Length: 221
Image (tube, rainbow, N blue to C red; front, side):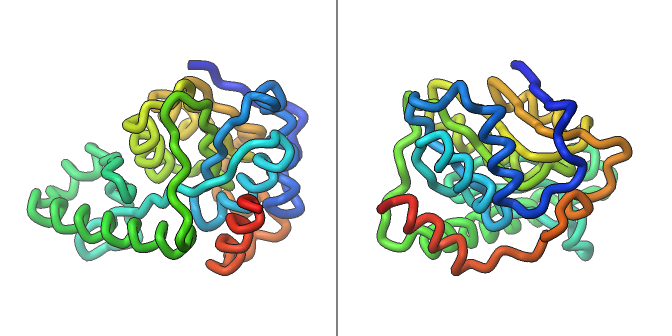
């Protein structure tokens, strides 16, 4: 596994499209190889769309859903994807004593929601095949890494030739842990201290569902 950073990367991007443009420059060696760019909705999709456009790759999504702790839904104990990728934070699970039955029910519920969200975003389009391809998994930033680790495991199960995780900004700690899931991690900026992804964007407004749908539609035409 290799980790690539760009020391001259800006500490603050104008918006997600600008971040995607810079990230694409760091991934330029994949241009011409027909890479598949997978964005994590919703915030990762505008970044992924710009990467796909500049690398002349295909664009699709992989939905990952957070697993919240019992009684504290904002605290992530892990994440799951529509097709069964799952990452669990063992330290938090042990510290909270999360029951197996709660974990089973939460996993099933969030997997159903992830499948529903993928259908909503793609419409009638089929998922783009992964097997044997270079896949670049993109989000707008990396804080804890739980979501992208679940997504990476789901992608791995579909046998890509190479799996790259790419983000415009992330904590050094998260980049180190997600490295276990990919052949390469590309993180344009690792600010210290790292507090929150949104602090590194001038425009970090929530991405509407309709924008994700439209970006996917444009990529298919």
